[in-house]
Length: 142
Image 1 (cartoon, one colour):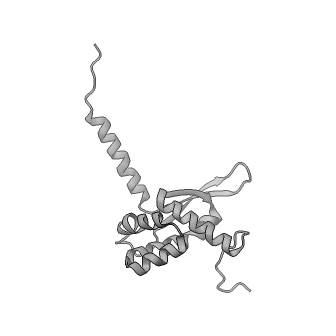
Image 2 (tube, one colour):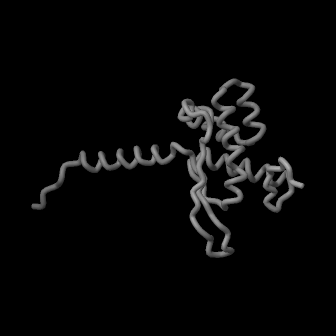
Image 3 (cartoon, helix red, strand yellow):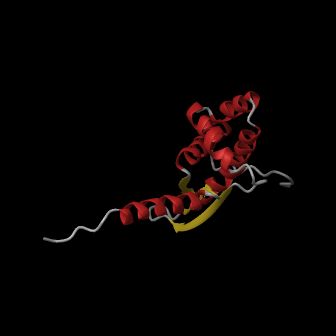
């Protein structure tokens, strides 16, 4: 029986799986959104949420724990300085999985995993570029 066995093995050995998920979470931290398979996204979500919880606490001990699990200091630095302050008011549920459909090559179901507030950041960036284009005066043809 599988009582309380939650780990998705993904057809990999334990060490490979841990490294793969750590790399996926680091990419999520650095880019804000990652396209992957649904199964990998579902496996990476708990790790990403635990890393944000560590970053919200913000002590040197929690920073060292995050570095030991993710193994990339630049990603951990961005996690503690950018991602955690954005999620300070939220009590959980920092990520979302958006299903995209099947991949053409092997028909694997794909999805985006992204931060919940990522859409707000993308809208603000779009608004800023729209304001830049509106601020320029229209040139009159001669």
